[in-house]
Image (cartoon, rainbow, N blue to C red; front, side):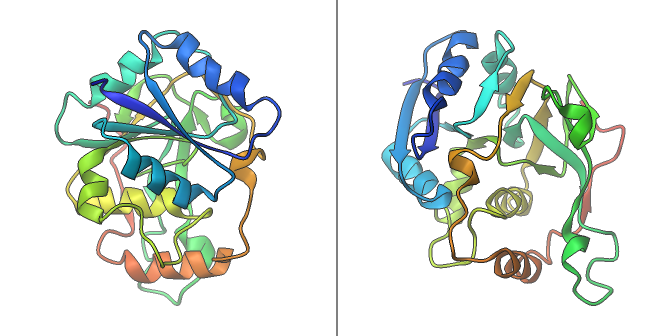
Length: 231
């Protein structure tokens, strides 16, 4: 069995196969791809979780292009450390304002701070980063998840307001809750955005997801890693 499986949620936009092909073209070995079509992102990811058995689930948006040869070895090397639970291509040092629960609820206080990546447009979103380090939160465009996190979580939550807007944030909080570290690997890539992953379902709403996140993750929010935590 391979170490990792590509879990793809797509609505078949023109060009998605070229993006997915870039993942394999730049990888050092062949990985199985499990594709779920015409489904919202969280149900699609749950189906991929249920129908696969590889220890690492690669949840990558179908509008991500990977340019870096051998990127997979960098990602999988992080999982040699049993304390690492999730790896991603874009992440931030902080998640939530320091006084988040000491002041009245204000949605912007949930924002991430000091975002880093090696996307082609890295400076547009934050800071360019090519190395490896601990982070507080990862962007959902590329998430590599150790299966036991989902096993312990009961899979991706069903019947709760966790969807398009906050699925990555809830997952990262759950990983921290379970005692896992979250790692950023600065892989050269591009997130085109606004394709299949840009399909916004009617429910739950932006406000509903954020309020639920705020109320549910008080035990692990706010959170920040130290600037020097890179090993």
